[in-house]
Structure formats: structure tokens, C-alpha cells
Length: 272
DNA sequence: CCTGCTACCTGATGGC
DNA sequence: TGCCATCAGGTAGCAG
Image (tube, rainbow, N blue to C red; front, side, top):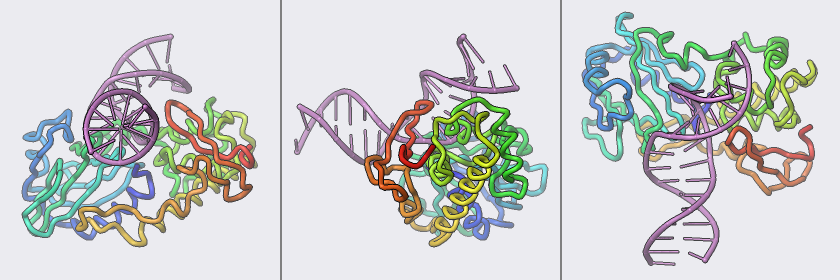
């Protein structure tokens, strides 16, 4: 479930814990999490490296390693991936990959084993990162840059918004929310969207992401709590997981449909 | 190049 | 209470 705001909050909260610190060793408990690499390969790459920076690219969390030729550690949480921090060397619970620092241990956890922890010489070597579209929280994402993007594509708005190669970072939740905020029908085709509607959509996307990020940072993730997760996000959501409930704007019942094999929640009353 | 479909996983949920 | 079926969803890889 982590999308752009959640990963951004994780990046900001993790940075002070690991910045400048030395990765002494790496332990892989569930090898599936580092596939297609092997535990030995990953350990050889990152053991002895220092964390030079922690950044987010789309929904990817990237630990840049120093010196530069040590490459970068790329983490993708997919649906349920999560980070935990242990102050002592003792690690409890289900943990897939463990990074031992001089003081403290970073654990990557994902019971469903969809998430990945991968090493690349450069971040461009990661295909998923290389092909990412514009980051919607940067100045390069503007109403006037969104309109041509929409015109260049021919598909339902919802599917366009979850395509990471166009706009990076939206998933099932915030794509639906952006469209609700913009009062646009999720089934509308991108190339038929007017300039004024594109402006509304831009505002919807940026607005919901900023609001969600604020929420994700207050309270900030506490990796020391094995049960930590983002709190209160449901309060800022207009449609996601609200099937059957009244629309907060027009009181009509929120509908759920399927798009691209995924569920989309939206309001037939005010999204047109 | 563009778009759409499916496999990958496993915990949670719902029906009987 | 217990069992089985279904659902959830991001992305890689493949098909058309």
C-alpha cells in the first residue's frame, strides 16, 4: 500500500537513523526478497559501505552508498513491505533482510514477499527507476506539463495515473483520490481531457499527495515499533475504501468498479 | 512504441 | 467453530 507520500515519509524518517553510517554486514533471511540476486551477492556488494544519502524515486527508496562506486541499495515495498529498526543486535519477528550497523539494525519486512531489496551500480541500472515519469511533487510537474502528457496517451484516466512511466508515485489509492478531488470520471479517456480539466487534475494530484504526506509525517514513522504504520489516512480520503458510503461532497453513494483488474472507487454524482 | 493481461505471494475476510 | 474460497494490489514480463 505504500505510495509516494508513505515512501517519502519513510525516506525522511530513515535518513537521520542511517546517514553516514557504515553497513557492517547484511543478512538475508528470506532469499526471495533479494531475487534475482543471491544473498551472497548482495552481502558482498553492500557490506562495508557507508550510507551517503537516502532518497525517494517514485515509490522506490534508494540508499546511496559511499564511496560512489559502491552503488546504491534500492528498496521497493510493493504492497506490504515495511522497515523496522532494532537498537540491539537482537532481531525479532518476521524479517526478510537485515542490515547490521555499528549501532542498530535495519530490517526489511514483507510477509508476502512481493517487496525487493536490490543492489545496483547506479540507480539508472534499475529498470523501474530508469523509466519513471515526472515526480508530481517537483516543480517540473505543472498544469501545463500535464495536459500534453494526457494528450499523448489514450486510456482511462485511472490507468494513466497508475502508470509509473508517466507520473511517478501514484497507486490505487491516490489515483482514485486525485480524480475525486478533480471531479473527473475515472473512466474518461486521457486524450479527451481539456486544458481546464487537466488543471483541476493537477491540483487534485498535488493536493492529495501533500495532504497525505503531512499526515504520514505527523506522527512520523517509528521504525522501533514493530507494529508501526501510518495513522489517520482514512480521514483524508474521499472515495478509497468508501464503497457504499455517502460522498462527502454530494452525498451520493460511492461506487466501486474494476479497472485494469483493480478496484476503483468513485462518485457517480460529482465525478464527470 | 503503446496498451492490456497475468503471475507473483500470503494474511485477512466472508460465507456456509 | 472450522473450513474453503475470495480478495487485496505494484510491477515485471509477455502478448497483441
